[in-house]
Length: 468
Image (cartoon, rainbow, N blue to C red; front, side, top):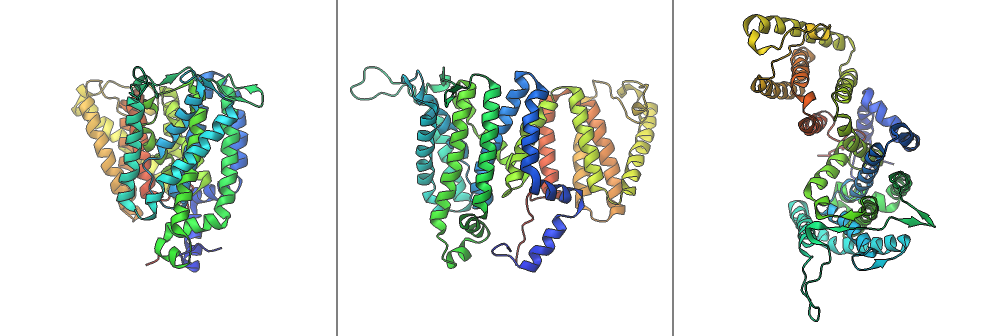
């Protein structure tokens, strides 16, 4: 079925174009069998990593996947901007803490607590989705962002509430100290006491939500959401109840976030206001944009990349493996025909040899000395004191990458690619690999910038066709 609001012939041509190349074919394969591949890999993962730390990383990745799936309903399907999305995550976490801790002396059954939280947050999402009937764009963004900020302020300050007929201040949220001592989940008589238990619970939930959203996407509601995303006015003229469907999208996304929040509170055995800031909102949006808005597989893939890749950057060995592996895969996928790849690789080493001879001859003080391997024959090792020079090279590398992206002709682009690749390796080996805290942020920023330039619809997102 052709997309509503697009020309069928144009849509088919653009689909074939988006599926060409290595990335396109990979996305086509993953879009058909991605869920089975994901389940198999996820089931093997805890037995490979072994320790609790690795499993906790997997838990965080699956939590982010759930959040990305929920945000995909609002942003990817309905095309609405929700900057207060993390507040629903916090409401779910605090709701579970209120009903499963000593904060109010309530220890209700887990399934009952999750059901109550889901229903309440669904109603809250429907209520806060009402302004979406009339507000769009920046106005809607400001309103939803205000909701997030209001939630954070309430969580920080509702620890000294003075009520009539109550002696002394009442602590509801625990203030900056949050609520600790949250009870672990107990489902059907099985007590989830280990991180591994929550990992498999989240895996089941991610699969269930993905299947449910897949069916919803193909339903009349999903088709109507896409029509609203493409052109709200045209959807209204087709008698689609745009206002009600926008509210449903907000409420659905809010419910998924709230259920994720209940599991987060149980895993962490506590909730704190610092867990639900704008920084988390940016991470969720980055996962969805990286994977591709409107794609269920893309939302999950983007979340896994955002959550797990930084952990590989904690050690120089893992960082080098990821960096050079990504550089090789990206080169193979983007440099066609492959003789260009050989030309670029040879050019990088040639430039490196010339640059090293010049630097060692004219400015030997900035070089750390000769290396013994083949790698060090063309790579300059700077003295640790030459930090400013490496920082300047980093800026030069960014300029070269952007210039190479802007150019179309290969005979103009390839020389810039050679210079950019050599400068990138130079900066990586002399600066970034030894500073993981900085490198993680820079790599993700660079990844998003390059991806938006090369594939603006995400790794697995579908190319949007603008009809003018």
